[in-house]
Image 1 (cartoon, protein in one colour):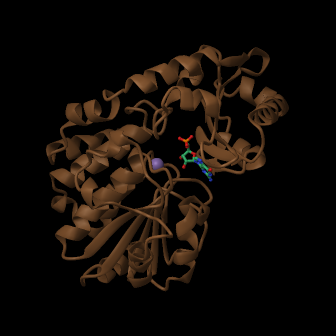
Image 2: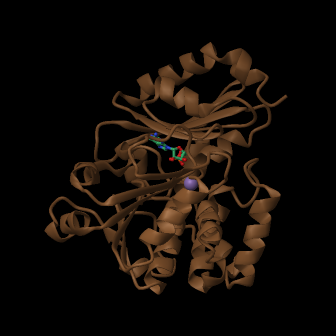
Length: 341
Ligand code: 5GP
Ligand code: MN
C-alpha cells in the first residue's frame, strides 16, 4: 500500500463504520492476534467492529482480550450472514486468497463493502480495494503495528491491543526464532511490552496449557516419524483412528511438524493429518533455508504459504499423500540437500 492508500484508509476510518474482521479458517495465533488487536483499536475509535472467524480455533487462544466477542461463522445462522451483508468495511487478516475463508466466501463475493487485506503470505489475490501485503514481515500482527504507524496512531495502542499483537508475533516467529524475525520485530515487541503486553504471561498462556491428550498425540506423532535420509526430509502421519483414540481437540497437533524439522540433517518436514469430518488429508510443510515449501505446496498439495512454512490439503488416502510427498522431495532432492548451506 502506498502512502496515499494509507491516507485513504485513514479518511475511511474517520467516521464510525460497521466493520467485519475475518481471519483465515482454523485461525492461528497471528490470525486471531492481528484480528483482535485491530478490533480493539476500531472499537476504541467509535466503530462497530466484530471478528468473524470462518471456523472454531484452539483453546490456547481463547484467553485473548475480547475473545468473548468473536463470532464463529455458520451458514445456518442468519445473524452471521447479515453481519457480512450489512458491513461497510471488511478486513481480511493473515491470508492471501478467499479460499481460506471457506463458507464465508460466497457472502464476501456478494458484499459491496470496502475490502482491505492485511497479510504476509506470498502471491496474494488482487480483489481487495486496499491490499497491504508484505511477505518479508514475520507476522500480520507486526503489519498491524506498521498500519498504526502509517495512520499515526501508535500512541493509541492500549494493553489489550499490545497483548494481541505480541501474541501474533510470538506465535508466527516460533518465539522469535525463525529467520523472519528482525531487529524491527524485536523493537516492536519491546514497545508492545512497554504498552502493556506481559510477555511471560502470554508465553505461558500459549505454550503451557498442554492437555494430556496432546501429550499422548505427541507420542503417537513421534513414533510415526519417518526420515527420508537421502532427501534430508522427514514426515509424520496421523490417522483419524489415532486422533479419535487419543481424544484429539482442535490445535492439539499444532507445532508437531517442527519436531520433525528439528532433527539434524532434516531440511524439509511434513505432517499429514486425516481430517475428522472431510474425506481429505491436511498437509503442513516446513523447511529451513532457501527451499520453498510454498512452491512445493502449490505444485503438489493444493495449498501455499511462506517459503519456510506452508500448508495444503489433498483429497486422497493418507498413504497416497505420503507417496506424493516422497516423489515431490525426490524431484527436488538437490535443492533440498543444499537448502541450508
Ligand atoms: P500450517 O501448516 O501451520 O497449517 O500453515 C503454515 C502456513 O501455510 C500458514 O502460513 C498458512 O497460512 C499456510 N497454509 C496452511 N494451509 C494452507 C492451505 O490449505 N492453503 C494455503 N494457500 N495456505 C495454507
Ligand atoms: Mn501469519
